[in-house]
Length: 276
Ligand SMILES: Nc1ncnc2c1ncn2[C@@H]1O[C@H](COP(=O)(O)OP(=O)(O)OP(=O)(O)O)[C@@H](O)[C@H]1O
Ligand SMILES: [Mg+2]
Image (cartoon, rainbow, N blue to C red):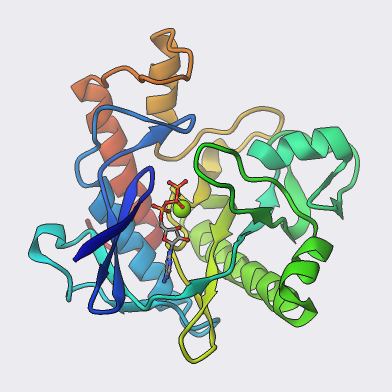
């Protein structure tokens, strides 16, 4: 196996022409990796992603080949995938106002060129889910919103429309399932690519808390920052230490690690209805 890419929390290997996506227990807060891993996070998110891929396989073909045909040392936190020619657009669907979408809205009254009604606040539910693509930024820089027209210019009208349709369909289906279990999916990011035989295919990870914002529905109060399902204790704790959000981040004490691990597991159990 050959390591071909190392992201903030995942490593990508090439093996027999396939990709092996390996999720680590690393966790990032405010885009900085913490020095302390969260035990089982890689396994929990891998299993959740696989659950969604299976659940939503009727919407669009996906890259999953096998969760078991992976090297022993990565068992449980690796997925063997078809290698795709990735489309360099981060396909984001938003149902609520948060994060960079909120900033864009406050500045322009729109996100990725999609106009929104006036008077929305942080955490507001949008009148309907919207497609807000971004560029895939090189390491160390931040992704930037692009308009749908820019995606058309880059990928062609037919592909752009298909990316938007599929992204919104996956979001709607996923958000509806999560809502039944008391979890709001505020937004999510998808990545698509082309298979060897030219089929538009869903890649990367799917509806995990690393690619999406999950909020507990019972705590949803528009008008301020929302409680993040799994990372909130980490974030609050990190800020309480006086940390300035730059490298290096402080070591996380065991009790905060434990609470955070429990939250990842709770999100998994609530969404899938399965015991961890
Ligand atoms: N089936 C696939 N074929 C080819 N590349 C893929 C496939 N699925 C995912 N990828 C790519 O693998 C990489 C996964 O890396 P990862 O998400 O860990 O890091 P990153 O996206 O570079 O950075 P970040 O840590 O900010 O997410 C991404 O570049 C993604 O586009
Ligand atoms: Mg990524």
